[in-house]
Length: 187
Image 1: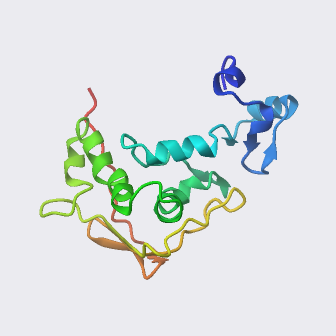
Image 2 (image 1 turned 180 degrees about the horizontal axis):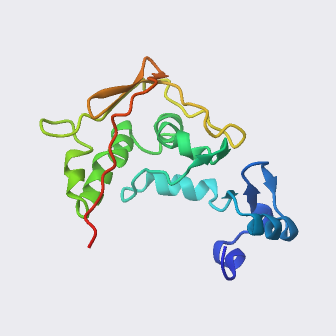
C-alpha cells in the first residue's frame, strides 16, 4: 500500500477489508488502521481473472494466506479443496489430474531448482517423502468464508505428512507434527 496503490491495483479504499471486523475501509479508517498495524484483505482480483489463472497450463496452485486471531483470508485453509471441488469438478475448468499436478509435481519441480529437497516432493515413488492426501473427488470442497476463514474443508479423509497421519477419517490428529520446513541454502 505504498505510493499510488489504488491506481496500481485498480482498487479503492472500499475494496480493502479490515480482517478482524470485515469492515470495508475509507481513507479515514485506512489511515487509522495503518497506524495501528494489522491484517487487511484486498478484494482486487475479479473471479474471471481467477478462472483464467486456474485453467492456464502454466500456473501452479498455492496460497500465501494466513490466519491470525481468527481473522484472515478463506483461501488460507480452503485453497486446494476449492480448486479440486469448485474449479475442477463443478466448473470443469481443469481435469482432476491437472489440478493435482498443479498442487504437487508442478510446484515441486519449480522449487527444486532452488532447493534440492523438493526433488522428494510431489511424487509418489520410492525415496520420496510420504506426503499424501486422500480425498473423495465427488465431495471435496472448501467451506472457509471471510467470516470463518479457518473453517475446514470437506471430502478429505486422510492427510499423511512424511509418513505420519495428520488427518484421519476427516479429523485433524491432535499432536501430529511430522512436517519439516524445507529450506534452500543461503547464498
